[in-house]
Length: 346
Image (cartoon, rainbow, N blue to C red; front, side, top):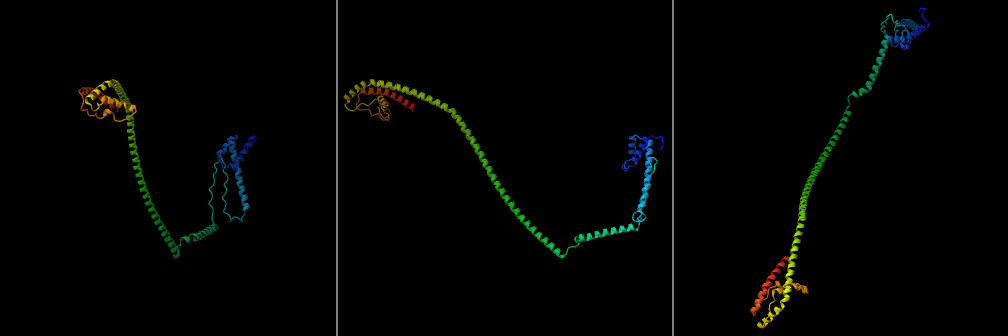
């Protein structure tokens, strides 16, 4: 190392050598370590110098460790372990050193003996395990075991067949019960359908009847006022007829109050001439008596004008017959009017 190098740069180079020889950084690549040193401020020459010095220090350390190991092992253990591989010095980065190929390990008769013993033990253990666990399963069964097994299988087969027969019988019974239930359900469904149809038909009939009744009620609503009107008209006409009849009766009563004098004269003449029987009452007088009779307190009976007239007398004068015919014609008209009035009242 030249003397012109500043002390701080020397310290940096020493730190770089320690960094390169650190076992923790041996796993990382050389490029990453060089980049790390460049980041610390070292130049390329300083890095090459540090790599060179680190390679020399590693070679010396490896050689020293080999000698110490050989001294510690000694000659007595030369046969107890395989020969060690020669340690290759660390490559001097920057100068193109390469590793030498490792030598194949040498085997002697002791190694072969150990291998034979180990393999024999393994084979013996596998054989013992096979005899203990595999051979009992691979051997054919004895006659007694075969017979017992066959008898067990036969009994199990018989039990299985019995269970199968029972299951078949139960299945057939279940199918029969299901068929019966299905028939009952179908019958009930048919009855329900018939009942529903009957209900629908009855409902339709009821609706038709209600429709007819509604129509009849509507027609009655329309007819009742007409009937009441007609009844009122008939009542008014009947009252009018009754009033006319009452008026006619009043006229008859007024005429009756004037007739007794004439009737007494005609009666005395007829009695003196005939000398037997009484004159027949006139129809007008009979009608008046019939209408006035119940009001006087007598019981209601057949009116006199509805009864058959008495037979005419045999001994009557011409005057009485004429007067009777005249009165009869008048009373006949009154009787016809009375008949009309009665018919209207009824």
